[in-house]
Length: 351
Ligand code: SF4
Ligand code: SF4
Image (tube, rainbow, N blue to C red; front, top):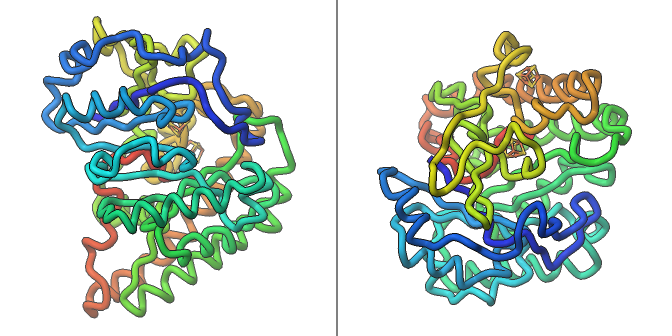
């Protein structure tokens, strides 16, 4: 099971699509449960994954260190990468996966995340590798109107420090924008080019770490899947700083997401239902995102239009299957190279 621990609701940045710190009354800014309580809650799990989350988790490094010193688990952190020196190097070395927020090329990243942000994050990513970090360093992107998925993902793939690149579309949780126009003119053609690049590199024995492609192909090759792919509500739960437990970490202000409390445990699960369970793409898409499925903030029409893009993306990726299988048969790549993610490392797979 994946346990996403909010270390605080506060953040030191104010990115345009997010807005920064979460109000304290929704997500408190300090921890009010003991690590002993957390240990009792997680203790029975034979294979726990703990992901530190916020706000910006590194605003509370003491809590991170206390948890890492008290529990045996796989450790993950999602950070904006601007405060990496707040955690001693030996703690960094113990992470299985580090996800750093960066949105692509410098001009695009800094447009969304603030001037100078790109340089700070790239410096942090390089520093982590120079320190000897051997885990999975993942660039975590948000794509919006100024993003070119092909150029921005390619930029991060070849930049150096990042092992994998994952992205999410900025849909549903911000105001409606011309997503369809952008998808038609930029995103879908970019996905097609990116699939071509992926296959071209595989022909040379290199499997580029494009998380959504790997995640979709993993379902096809290994027949392993969860709905939703992030596991929210079924295999992933988030613990707020006051000990309340949520199905999805961004659903902190809606009642369907509140599923328990650290002291009482998880009292119920939350599932994806129709129309997804009857959708021919369900196995790959998994309903995409529990929050978007439940909230439908862009209405039914917005939901369907995101589905269209998801389906086309899945089609493009699956169209590469035949070529991939022949590369495996020829021994150019191995099937195991396509087994990603190896555990739920908080990459949500479907953008
Ligand atoms: S494509 Fe749409 S309807 Fe189909 S499973 Fe995904 S979210 Fe559900
Ligand atoms: S993909 Fe959706 S349901 Fe899953 S963690 Fe992200 S916001 Fe929550």
